[in-house]
Length: 372
Ligand SMILES: C[S@@+](CC[C@H](N)C(=O)[O-])C[C@H]1O[C@@H](n2cnc3c(N)ncnc32)[C@H](O)[C@@H]1O
Image 1 (cartoon, rainbow, N blue to C red):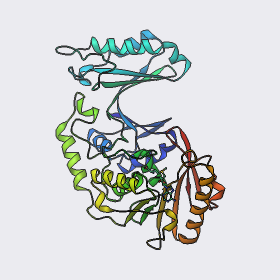
Image 2 (image 1 turned 120 degrees about the horizontal axis):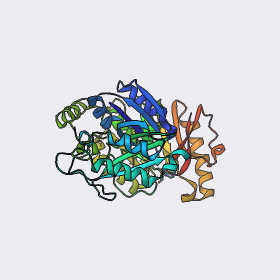
Image 3 (image 1 turned 90 degrees about the horizontal axis):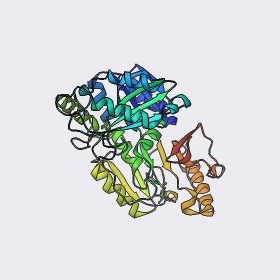
């Protein structure tokens, strides 16, 4: 069985390591993701466990599609009843990445796939093509250099949507980016962690999940993953994998996780999200300025997503960067540091000696992860 996990281009290596940890060795890196081969049980586990994947697909077929006739002929070979359920509508998302595939045209690709499903050997009626149905299964067609990779989206909602986020903070990180930051910083949960600018608590909550060996998607509701609505879904296996993951969660945090923010209302957002994520009791939440922090232990990981200039103004940002750099250098000498900052932020004002500067994207904003 072949699958694809997608992620931002910059974090493909982190995702590859996560897949290896699940025992998946047969991997093929893609521009924004990884194709891999594994059995159904491991793939189910991956859906619930991967912290940095954006989406997942089950690969239906890969074939040459240099022209519309070959595309249609290859599509006719697909046994759609083995993939789609008759009562579930579907939509098609084509990605045509180069001039030869663009020459086919999106409309042709969509119409050809819709036609092959409509004429598939379903016992009664075939599933209907409906681009805007809320519950539609997405057929993904990726075309490049005359070849088509056809997949079914198995995630449904994007995987950063863990199901616990509360609203109330204007600049939250995606959960998948927070997990990538922690993994890039080498956090395993065995050392104290402090996020002194925690905002809505994304990093601290993801850190608690990691430290507790808790599967990040385990609280998604029944029927929330698209794979639960595909033909061949094995409900008993899915339940067993979910139960095993629940049982593998630790009940004690190996080392404390501290999170604070200068704004008490953001700490309350973090608290409600952590409650919903069922990790609130593991977090030491407080409200205070970073400038008031003294290290709670001799060593640990200080990780923070610093404010961006457009929200607080250039003058305040310069002062803050200077103060953050001073506090880190004078009070946290035994700590490892991971700071996520805008790529155009005044990094020289932090005056930190970094071991690594990793370019990432926070949505559309280029950012850097400084590791010191
Ligand atoms: C970019 S946001 C962090 C967002 C967070 N990573 C999340 O996912 O919700 C930066 C946070 O730093 C906080 N902040 C700004 N100045 C601070 C200071 N001097 N001490 C502590 N927190 C501060 C802001 O209130 C804001 O919540």
